[in-house]
Length: 166
Length: 200
Image (tube, rainbow over all chains, first blue to last red; front, side):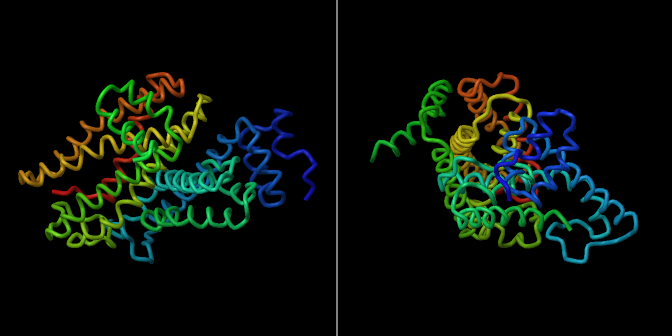
């Protein structure tokens, strides 16, 4: 990885040619190929939070659409739900709860990660959206602290998903 | 008692007096540690002073549990352990949501100070809610809907404190500060209506 090269998102931000949606896709790719550069770029992008929000909404919106199709096809959850909602109506309810529940899960994840990183003295802090959540992996703190923050933050995230999402 | 715990208690109790004094006290408090200790203390108070005695008395919530892994007959006993992490997560969630809205609106924000004020207002209000709940229990008022409404009335005080802090300390306009605090309550209520059951 060449850290001296300009970060992909920053280049686009300067040119002003790419909208939030285009940058969202570029950051998504950048986090797979050059995570540190992409993390630096999104941190310095004035619209970085919007990028994360757009991606969160796109992902959760697509998920909500999927479960609506499941409901219309007559499917029911295979695993026993933790909420007392009739199985035949589960996916219909989830169509409307996926977006708020998903955003709440992302916020909670980021909040836990923030608190842990803060307690461990990290100055560059993660903040809420899925891309920023991935940014924990490249924070300038010891790798085991990053790993601890990721694992601890994933527990409530998974708990919320386990209760509300099938 | 060292200076730090003493100033923590002073900040806490200033929340029952003048809101401006509360803002001044909280501005000087270490952030986000003060908010964390306040949120933790509020959660432990709920757990030990409310749910534990109810569990020992063999009580059950009048409204059945909405969660299959929290059976109604053991709801209060499980809540002794379940409520502290839940309330801490709620503190992080509402603070995070407020911070994100401020950042998206390109307004000044400081996550540490938002955590501080949300934790401390939760403690100020929560410490009153415990004896309030016990009053309802002892009087035998078994109406969880009315109890919830009475909680919301008491929460108005927390909204006032939180809004004033955001306005004075972070420079957030008053209407936005009030909207954020009302919004954080609106965010917490639906989740709590699934997870939390009234102590009556």
